[in-house]
Amino acid sequence: MSVPDVLAREIMALPGVAGVAVEKGEVVAHAQRDALIPLMMTLRDDPRFACEQLMDLCGVDFPARPERFEVVYNLLSVSRNHRVRVIVATDEAALVPSVSAIWPAATWWEREAWDLFGILFSGQPDHRRILTDYGFDGHPLRKDFPLTGYVEVRYDEERKAVVYEPVHLTQEFRSFDFISPWEGITTLPGDEKAHAARAGARKGAEG
Image (tube, rainbow, N blue to C red; front, side, top):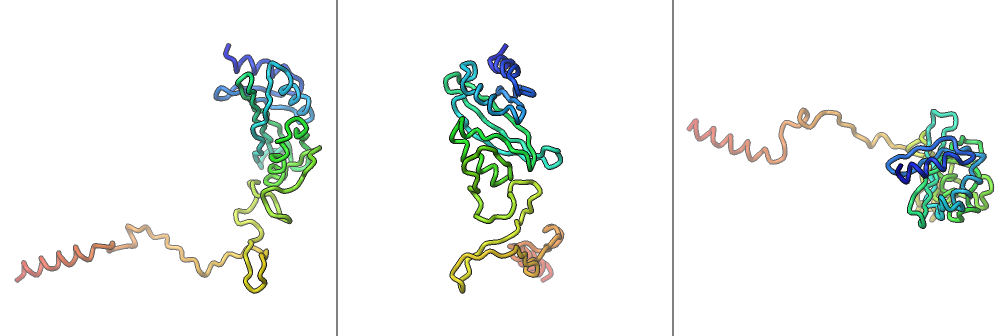
């Protein structure tokens, strides 16, 4: 049995683990949200796992699911040279326990997940936006967020300040040409030389 398979079997026996798989040589564990903190403490402190570092935390959005978000934790054991991915499902209202007390670096990533997805973390001491501006409306990495956003930002020369305005797409300056270039263009650049040479040859033949 390979090392990832042994690791997966040991993690599957832990409380709060709903399922485990080995994907591309790495262990992926699906955890229950309410059991996240004890599980993460075990993965960090138990010498079988020894996941000293939280390398990354990110969100994934599946709008069709009742619990539309997944929070993905990528853990690294430097001493044992293996990785463990822990996934927790949540929705727009449920709180995910913060792991910032276990890995302080999680504060940055939890703020990012809140800012971009709107995922809420209980026990997070610094629940502020981190990438978008203050007063930003919505969460831009949600799949139902409009591509154009809700407001646009520009510098107003008269006010000498940055102003926020509703998004306005000026259509009258747009010209759409749906004709294939092979159908709509009868003469390509450079063809005039060939036409001139062909016409000269025709005149010479006639003379």
